[in-house]
Image (tube, rainbow, N blue to C red; front, side):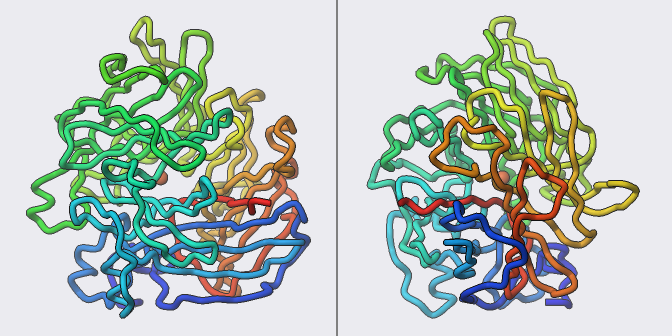
Length: 454
Ligand SMILES: [Fe+2]
C-alpha cells in the first residue's frame, strides 16, 4: 500500500487487508458497567487488489464499506471485529456467495458511511441511491434491505430519530431522480410516510435537519456531473456554481407544495449538529464550508466553521452566524435532544492548539455559556467522530452531558487503534477507559453506540 500516491490510500487512511476477530481486549481504566452493547464505526476500505488505475481514480467516498465493532459487557471489552459489508462485488471478490436481495435497478453498493441500530436491526448505510444492508450482531452481512418492501428507492446515510416517537426520518437522493425522497421509518422498521420533493439539477444531499415542526432541506451547489462520468471518476459529483443554494422548510405533516424555500449564499453542508423551533423561527446548528469539492476533489477546500442558522419562515429570511471559526467537523449531540433545544455539541478538529500544544482534538461546545473545551490528542492520532451515550439508558431526564463519549483514536506507539471512553462532565480529564484494539482502524466516517436490547 505504501507505494500509492493517492492520499486516500495512505497512512491512517490506508485500507486494511484482513478481517480480524479478537476476544477479551486489554483495557486501561474501567469500562462503566452500564455500557452493554456495541460501539460500531464504518468507513471505506476498498477490497482490492488495488492497481495503478485505483491510485489514479480512487475517491474516498466510494471505497467498499468495512464496519468495525467493539462489544462491551460487564465492564469488559468482549470482542473486536471488522467485516466488509458484502455487496455482490465484495462477496464475489472474497470468493463467497452473495446474500441476494432487493437492490435498486442493479445499483448495488457496499455501504461505507453510517452504521445504525433501529428496530432491533443493524443497518449499514450509504447515500446516493443504494439500498441499506442488514448486518447480524457480529457484523456478518445478512443482505440488502428495502424495509420489508416498503422502501421505494435507496436510503441515505444520515437519519434523525424523533425521541418522542422513535421514528427515523431521512432524505434520500439519486442522480436519476428529479426529486428528493423524504421518508419516515416507523419504530418497528417499515416506511410509513414518503414525500417526493422536486429539485432540479440532481443535488447531493448528505444530511438535513429535523425540528418538532419542520423538516429542513439543504439544496446546495454540489450536483451530479456527467463530465465526471465521462472522465471516469468514481464519484460523479462536483461543486457547481450555476446551481443556486437554498434551504427548504417543510412542515412535518406537509407535502412538497408546503415547502418554504429560502435562497442563501453558496455554501456546502455535510452535517447538522442539531435543530429546534424557537417560537416561529427555526434554529439550525451545523458545520458549513464556503464551497467544497471543486472538480470533485476533497483536497484544497476552504475550511469549515461551526455555524448557526436562524430561519424565519414567515419573513423568508435566514440569519447566518459563525459560532466557532476553528475548522471542525463531525458534529454530534446527545440524541435525546434531537428536534429540541440542546446545550452541548461535540465536534472534531484536526488543528487544535491547547495550552500551546498542537494536535487534534475533540471539542465540547456549551451553547448556553458560549464556551468550548478541547480535549487534545497527539498529532497523527486521527481521532474520529464521538458518539454520546447517556450514563443510564433508563434515565430520560438526566443531564444532557451526563454520559460518555466514545471515539476511535490511533496510538502511534502501538501502531494500533484505541476506543476511548470519556465522561462528558470530565471532558478534559483522564478517560474513563481506553480499550486497546489489536489492529489499526483506518480513518472512516460515522459511528453509533448500539445498546443491547435487554
Ligand atoms: Fe456524514
